Length: 113
Length: 117
Image (cartoon, rainbow over all chains, first blue to last red):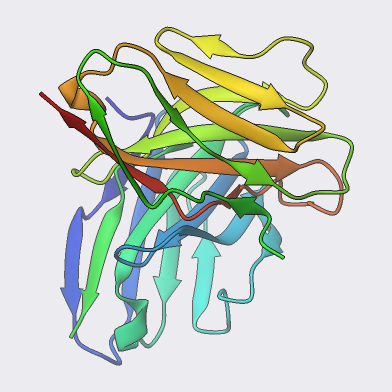
C-alpha cells in the first residue's frame, strides 16, 4: 500500500476546465511535492510545499497552478484552465528527513481533450 | 547542462543475469544525494536505493547495488540475478543540498529495461 494516496487515478477533462488533483499522505509529514511526467518523458518537478507554504516552484508552475493543504491533511494541486499540454501523469510525493527519499503516490493520469 | 544523464534509452538482459544501468550527474555542490526509482508499466514510482555523496561505501539493497564513482560523477545501478518483474523504466535522480530550498529531486530521462526469459 502506497504511503501517499492520490485521487482520482485517472481524470479526463476538456480544455479550459479547472481540475483538482488530490493527495492524502498516510503519515503526518511536513514536506510534500508535486511532479509531473508527460507520457514517455522524464519526471519534472512542479512545486514543493513545506509547513503549509510553497518552498520552491519550477518554471512549469505558472499562474495556472496552485497548491493547498486546506484541512491539514489533503494536499491538492489545482489547474485553473487546463491546456492540451497539461496532459500528463501527476505524482504527489512526501519526504521524511533530510536524506530521506521521496515516496510517491500512484499518480493521477490527467487527459485534456 | 543536464544534471542527470542516462545514456541508455533501452536495454535487454537475460533472466538471471546481472545488468548495469548507467547514470552520470553534474553538480558543483559537495553535498548531494543520488536515488534510483523503478517505474513499472502500471506507472507508480518505486524507490530502490540511495547514495549520499559522503557515504564511504557503495549502497546495497537486496539485489540492487549502486556503483558510486565520485570522481567520475557516476552512480550506476547494478541489478543482480534479473527477474522478469524487473522489466520497467528506471530513473536516476539527484538532490543537491545547496540552492535547493525545496529539496527537490532532478530526474534523468530514464532507461527502459527489458528482461528476457
